[in-house]
Amino acid sequence: MNNYEAVLIFNPDLTDEIRNQQLDTFKEIIAQAGEVTSVDDWGKKKLAYEINDYKDGYYYIVDFKAEANHIKEFERRMRISDSIMRYMVIRKED
Image (cartoon, rainbow, N blue to C red; front, top):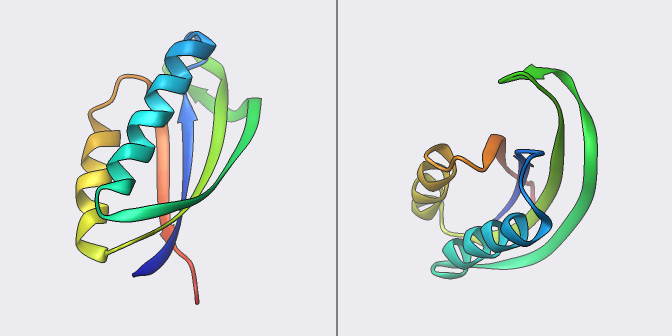
């Protein structure tokens, strides 16, 4: 398994409950073929540029281990999610 880091920026209009449910859903997707090692909640931050007329977003940093072929499914699910404004997954050096 490889080590990965995902940066997730959630829509600021979401309630805390819905945002936490969505985060749990993404953690479950990772857990299907990997393991979440840590989740860092950065909270609401100002964006570098406006995205869909929003100036703020909720940031989460998720460190996890997974097989390389599972990353495509994880990214696909984030891409079609209405709650995620932007995301980025990078492979960390061992």
